[in-house]
Length: 104
Image 1 (cartoon, rainbow, N blue to C red):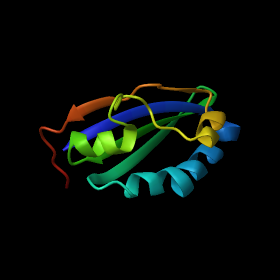
Image 2: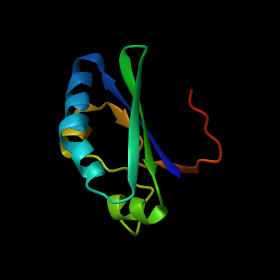
Image 3: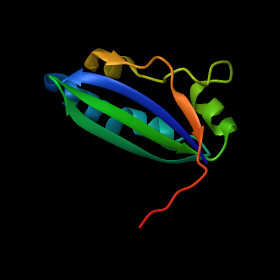
Image 4: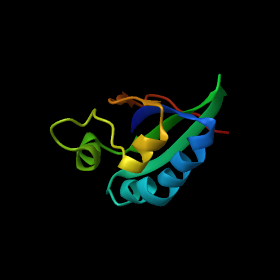
């Protein structure tokens, strides 16, 4: 299992636009990829902004390549609407191999 991690920040007034874009547009793009295994979206208030952390789960790097592109799978995938709602965001993501997990 590979975890793809991305972060971004929105002003509080724009946070709902990002949430809406994620649930109505981006989630469909994720679900369409064979090998997509799930996603968690975390958020917290940080100063005057809302920080988002997206942890997507993938079965293989091939699945990530299908989603993000073969040349640069570490590049963030953001729709224009999401870019406009965010004040700051990672242009690149990080990929980690899940080596241990315990859920209760």
